[in-house]
Every structure is written in C-alpha cells, then in structure tokens.
Length: 387
Image 1 (cartoon, rainbow, N blue to C red):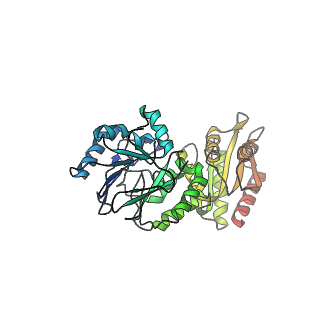
Image 2: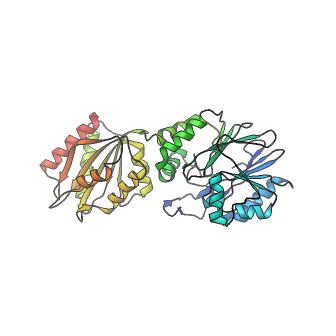
Image 3: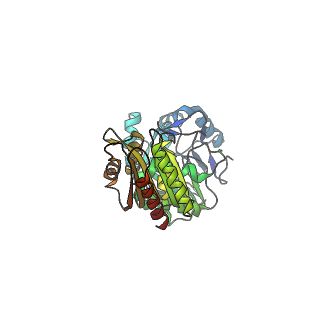
C-alpha cells in the first residue's frame, strides 16, 4: 500500500508472505500483514511494532520515515508477540523514547522482556490523551478485545482510529480479495468469544468521528466506514448475518452424507436456496466456524461414534461453544447402527449456549436411509423453510 495514509501518518508495517499457519491453527494462504504506523508532528509517535521475524525491515521502515529525527513515543496497544516483539529492539535503538501503554501491558512486558520499563513509561487509561502538536491522541481501554491490556487510539486531527486487532483480517495488506470473508473468519476465530467486550468498545467508538480505521492486520479502511462498523456490530452481538441454512456434517461410509444431500434437495424444492454445506472432515475448521456464525439456521449431522459423536463434529461444536455460539435455530440428524445417541450428545454440548431454538424434528437414521428417516428429512426441510 502507499506509505502515506494522511499527510502526517505513514504506514511502516510489513507483509509476511512465508507464513502458512497463523497462531498455530489458522490457515493463511495469502500470508499476514503486521501493521505499524508513524505519526509525524512536533513530536513523533510510532504505533506498535511487528513480528520478530521482521525486526530489521521494520526498523528500516521507521528510520526511513523519520528523515533524521528521533521518535518521542512508542504506543503499545497490544502485547501479542506479532505486534510487540520489537519493543526492546526499538528502545535500544532509540533510548530516549517513551513507551505509552496500559498498566496491564507493562506487567506483560515484564513477562516477555524481564523489564516493565519503569524509567521510560507513560501509563494511560480510558480517556487519557497525548498531545503531539496538531495531533492529539485519545486512548480508549479495550480489555479482552481480545487480551486484557488492549487499548485503541483515536487521532482527532485526522479522524483516524488505530484499532489494535479489531477490524483485522487474514492476508497481506496488498491481498486483493473480499474483505468481509477473511475478516469474518479472523473475527470469529480470534475475537469471537468476546462479543460483549467488542460491543462495549463499539459504544465508545460511536462517539467518535472516524474517517479511517488503521488495524494491526489487513488493509487500512478509508471508505464506507459504516459498513465495517455495522458488520462488527452484527458479529459481536452474535446476530445472524445471512438468513439461510448452514449444514455441517461428518459421514463415515456415506450414509449420513446421503441424508444431507436429500435434505438439501428438499430444501431447494421448497424454495430455500440460501444453503451452504461443509463436510467437517475436509473443510478448514475456522471456515466452518465462520459459516456457523454467519447463517441464521444450522443443521448438525453426524454419527454415533464410540458412544459419543464423530471427533470432527465434537471439535466443531467445542469451537462454537467456546466462542459463545447463540441466537440460532439448530436442527440435528443422527446416524447409529444399533444405539443412536448423537443428537442427545450434541444437545448436551449446546445446553449452556444462549438463545438457541432447537428444531422439533429430529432425524434418526439406522445405518441407511429408509422410508421413516426420509419422511423425517422432508418434515425437517418443511420446518426449516417455514421458520
């Protein structure tokens, strides 16, 4: 992207084109961006650092943006290592710099670096400001979005929100793809558990006049800001984004898959065409989780397995519940040759989830489809389409 975001704010981040798995679990075919920014004014503030693999590239980016000057502040919004790894390197290069962060961030710095920088720190909390000249930075606390130390920063002069991990996405900053898809997968994978905290932050942001959002991952957002904020409001309130039916299934010998195929056909015959199907044995888990949170209705279809349910389905439901899955209609299809119990297990796993409406039709297959189970599938399709 262009180095200049505004006349005074420059992008100094890096692209990681070598990474294929982010945070040990998320596939990132288009890499990752580790974003950092610099505000040039009477005083100079650098916003966050980058991953340890890019130390020299980042320090070179900082240096080339300074034009011989020395930075006054390093604002640390988030202490995950992909953003904080170079704090010590930065301080060693610019020993007069002041570190600006929350109190909790400095305690985490002690864990990472063996020091809390007590001689060079400025502790900020919600509503505190820092004047750079023309630019005044206002700090908003954002605990558990998605770590406890997080702050976000608003520059009132250029109307820029530095949003930490909020509004981030997978992919390098110059990846040409639809923003919402990978931002949604990023949100529900990484931030999704903390909807209440995101809602609290959005209420604070609602009082700000925002023209540009500068996240720590993904592209700078400088158009249609309301679109991105509305999506975050939908996601963080656990509201369905798409009125439709998502079907997640596992199948050992193809019989449960056959039932799903029959259900899809009947749904389409009924005029329900917004349908997405994922085989959990083949679909990336974070993609399946994203889809479950996107659609208004979900069908879970699996086999009884070792007096439990098939492992991919168990893992999938665990991913949903640990992210506070709620506000959906849920239907079940179970398969079992001699003691089918998958529906009971799945319901039990979801019993603590809020505001779930369970379908009144439970499909039970004894090994293969027969007239009775086919009638149940047809009845389920009728119910899902009517509701």
